[in-house]
Length: 186
Image 1 (cartoon, rainbow, N blue to C red):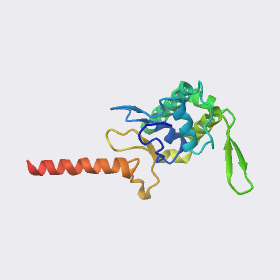
Image 2 (image 1 turned 135 degrees about the horizontal axis):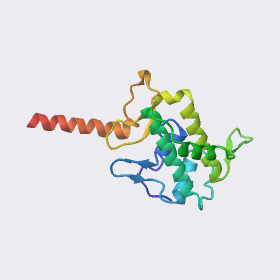
Image 3 (image 1 turned 120 degrees about the vertical axis):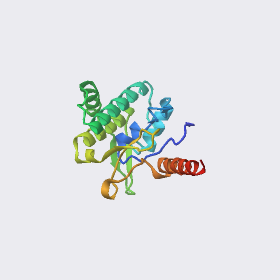
Image 4 (image 1 turned 30 degrees about the vertical axis):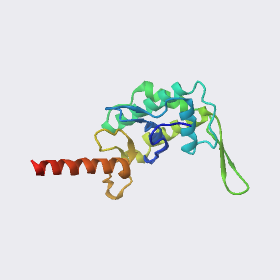
């Protein structure tokens, strides 16, 4: 089992954005949550893509390349920049694969089976649907300085500032509180 902090924080509102969030604090202390194939398999299960961890041998590097291409495409979208052809092609290649197999069980549950490639196909398709769909207008980056998590702002009035109130919101508010108290004592 993995030992990384907050291994399964799904606060972004989109499968691809949650996958991108497995690299944290990209501009400061950079934290990699997918340090090995075990973590990749665990994430796929925790994200609800597959019911059991697939064989991820030789899949970590392609998964990380997909994640980084999706990150750059989302950043370009956020900033109104053109989408890089190489990143777009990589995303499209992954999206053309076979999706996970869904089976409706007798008890009404859904069983999700597939390979790591089918899981990455699901991630790539999620990214494409976001980038080309109406939800792209809801795309934001967390307002906490150190955080680089992307999320969909579905709040009333589009006023959400943090990826997660319990983590980044509390940290940002605590920092602001400490700054106010420091200024008041000087």
